Length: 462
Image (cartoon, rainbow, N blue to C red):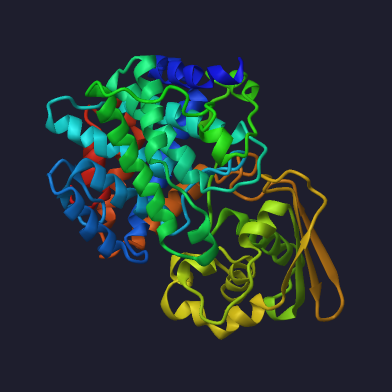
């Protein structure tokens, strides 16, 4: 496939794929990460500024088309997509495609379920088998956009690539022809946003950008269905996505070899901790070393994390005395300090007074980051975590992959434990029976006649 055929390949894949085309592994992972994402969204109701986001989004689109998972309020589909995408990502707890540096489910699921609720209200319900196929298509597109480049991350791919994945997913559900989906990619490109500046500053705008692109995906499909023509070379044009956002770096053959063969949803990694994925290696290493050698946090004199360039660039930020929640989650020393001080990394550890915990800051000050010899600007691993104790003893954890990666996955029981724990972090508190009901719906998702029921379930209203 030549570079200029990339749009056509993605659009054809999105138009043609059906549930019966999916291997069992892809179907299983779709259920796994559907449950994980809905659980993270429930926990996201405790995140920063969620009430303000919901209030503003409702004003932007007041038509009662879809459900805010924050409180069950009804609003326009695009507005619901903004709110729900923000809930998914605001805690930095949602799954990630490491090879692409993309959190695809946040944009895709929020857009798809909002659009599906609107369809149900119009007498066109979306069943669960169609949802599974659409999620797999969307993750393929979002993931392979990231895989197709070696360029250093310059824009926030969870928002940018995620928006295109959401277009592919909704286009699949809407039964659009390939040419329509191709032009919808163009409409999405015209709305695409995703600066990394909020990441650097720890601003909650980071997750809100995912919501903006989720809303944009719905608008892109609406434009095409209204007969409004869109650009046909959104990815490969002279001013297209890869030229401008990926510095002209594109390996289209990586897409050719994977579409319809290597389902990217099977490559998703869990996030076992509510912090930037790039901070998880130090927690993994410390956990393993402390379990294996029996030392305590107070025995540690120094922790050295030897990591790839991407890790140093995005989470190797300095420790500050009073960090914002979003800054702390993306600061590797702080996250390591949380684990050493508390023996865990969970949602409450990045909220309120916990951000100023003297024990966390004392242990975080022991952490130093060093470059390794990796030349891959998008690699998250391997990593080496070296611990020197106060008595001079040294221990080293060499991590080929970080806990949560498909090669070191969460078990089904661990996935369920994370979901249940996330449900318990919802604000206001939701009945435990609601978690069981939502998990049961996801377990039999292929047989659910109308996936709009998921929205009420995750909002704790049904």
